[in-house]
Image (cartoon, rainbow, N blue to C red):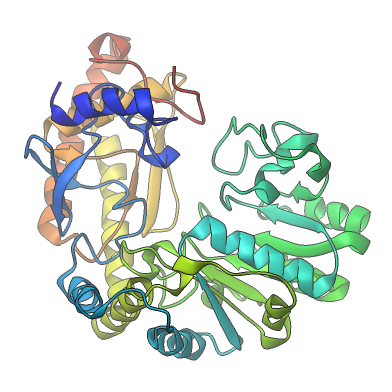
Length: 436
């Protein structure tokens, strides 16, 4: 064990859950062996506490660092803020500049509010929608954060959220009185959506969905979402926290024909600095003034400054095209490596946010072994890849060469039924599990 692994053992004793984010738990990657902590980062490279260097071909800060780690242009904008003062009694003019940039990119919207994380921005958007409509119920599909409104879906039926990214989420601590206020529907399932609407249409405040994650929306689904939300007077909220800024500058809804009343952005908006934005039609967003929506650190200056610098750089360098190109090469490389080795995998996701799963009964064991063997070769990996501007052709080529070698090595172990025997630690977690 190195310093990173030793520190995590200590952390689990004094931090509930070990980390602040489920997606960063070492148990989600390579239990006991994952380098849980870093000392520095640059581009697509990360150094652990033993100063061992890795190329990050996994989540790039859980999708936040769309330009790469420690981007010079964004960092310089942040340093200027640090030198001039990040927080005062007065407001940051960057709030207005950023609002103008966001509204220029989204001509359908008229007003902007800010937060500093995706989950709280979604809670803010829901508060606005309920304030605007005077109704309570929310229909949603996809993953939208940890707040009460979302987890309440599991109060009435404890597996309601299983198909929405993280199975096994418990609603403990969520008021039982919220049961029935959040209802789930499946992406691209028009009949299911319409049936739920018909049963609840008098009480629906908002329809919430990600524009896409694993697959593109079908035309009928998009048309139905747009039409029904208008007919019943529900606020259509598009969660762009994950997909935004990757396929195009702004939100994926602009390319897919979705017509939201509100869109929510975070993650790639500010390249690793805390920032979130809720944009919407003026008639809807003005309802924010009729409810109490306020937070001190939503007024700090670093977030907006980082977002402005990030958007400017994305405009100047056509970065979305790069993300799509790199992601496509990686997905094609996964398929080629699988064909060469004879391993069966299923590839999904849009090019900038691709993933694969091993098509076998012990897929979690295979995932763990893949991560273990790739870590030995100097790569931080999972069975997903989030493209960034920092991933260059050499990085992709070296990664895919390593994948071919690992798949070939794994093919023999799968054939011999010895995958678990070759693991140096436990099998990774596949969903939410308590740490004991």
